[in-house]
Amino acid sequence: MKILTASLALLTLSATGAIAQMNHNMDHSNMPMSAEKMEGAVHAKAVINSIGDGTANVSHDPIPEIGWPAMTMDMTVLENAQMMGEVTDGDEVTLMLVKGEDGMYAIGAIMPN
Image (cartoon, rainbow, N blue to C red; front, side, top):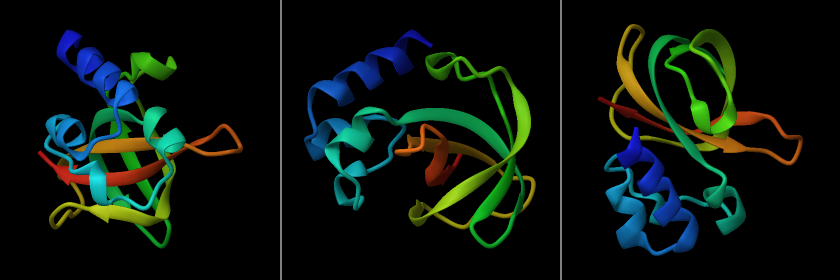
């Protein structure tokens, strides 16, 4: 957990692709998101229960950075979300969650573990 917190701190201090690539092997440098959205991004380990049009039902581990306990929930998948490999129901993944202007978090990227 300390490594994840340190990685996120580095990400907020610098928007360079090199640092972004260190965080869960996700290359954030090519994502069409503002630096502000990238600064507020958090990562979570999850299981994909199902993926639909613009949504995913996931069971995620606790996300202490935003005060969320482990839970199963439907989440919006951003229109420009990056899928870093093929993902099917039941797969364990790392999610990058991005806080929207409405204060809600949505999936900005999914990477199979």
